[in-house]
Amino acid sequence: MQFMKKMNVVEIFYSLQGEGANMGKAAVFIRLAGCNFNCDFCDTEWKNGVEMTIEEILHEVKKYPSKMLIWTGGEPTLQLNDEILASFSDFYNCIETNGSKLVPKKIDYISCSPKVSPQTLRKNFDFVDELRFPVKKNDALPEISELPNAKNYFVSPIFYENNFENDKKNAENINFCINFVKSHPKWQLSFQSHKFLKIA
Image (cartoon, rainbow, N blue to C red; front, top):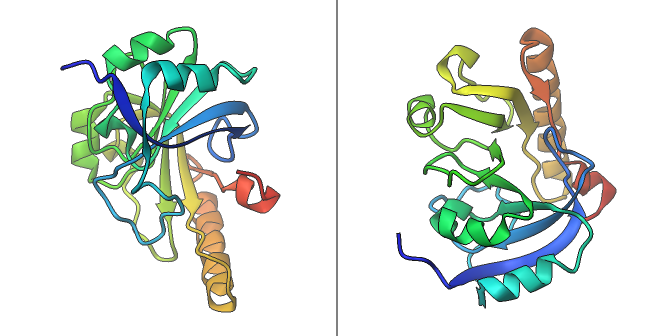
């Protein structure tokens, strides 16, 4: 694959990971533009970014004390590859992916929020660090035996923008996930704590 000297970047920011097994850890987030899905519950602006060279991205991430990078989007595998990651070898590189494409081999931690079938997931992954399914009330979830091996299997209640009707939907999604985990204890609950804490 040809080395990409520039990437289309929505934003680079420093915050705490708000969900999953790394919740509460300080990290530098690199949000890349572009996605191959258009989920109605997506809470990020991924369509428009600015071109940045790898050197410019490195300059930005080195401003912060954490060595954990989280490549997110959108869908970061549309741009990210091992040639690019070679420039970030001093960091602990994590990715948040929808599972539709192979992840670069130089990624250290895979968080997959699946938007594809279990068959596609098994084709693309032998192992992931966490599978984090976005869930709304009455969603059907696959059996763990259908999925790639993972350290963590999460259900994450979908949150919609705040208004009275959405507050009701959000509460229903939370309760559905709680009851699901209680009935299926191999799964864990993950929630977007950054939204409750009102941090980026």
